[in-house]
Length: 138
Image (cartoon, rainbow, N blue to C red):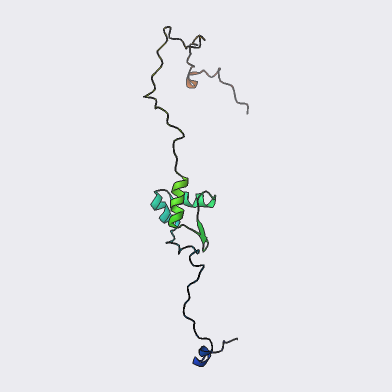
């Protein structure tokens, strides 16, 4: 079995530790992500079911991270989910109550001029006689 060689204090003197120098690229690096939430926590925050959160992530409809074989969500993911599920009206239209109703016609017929057809009720099936029903051949 392989054993790494033990280091002596003398070995460390060969490679002194340099003082930390600022990385010029650290400003471009994304900041440390916030806490990761499990689907149950996201469901509680959004007031929906855990199943819905997992199903939407599985179908790729909402952003998520796949860490350790399970879904994880950042605060930014949750904000994006809310934005994706937001619905806005396409245009402002007056409601039915604000729209004036058309005046009723004088004759009671539809305005298209077609005569109204009188409706006739059918007899209930249970009231039909046995002779009216089709027989089932065995």
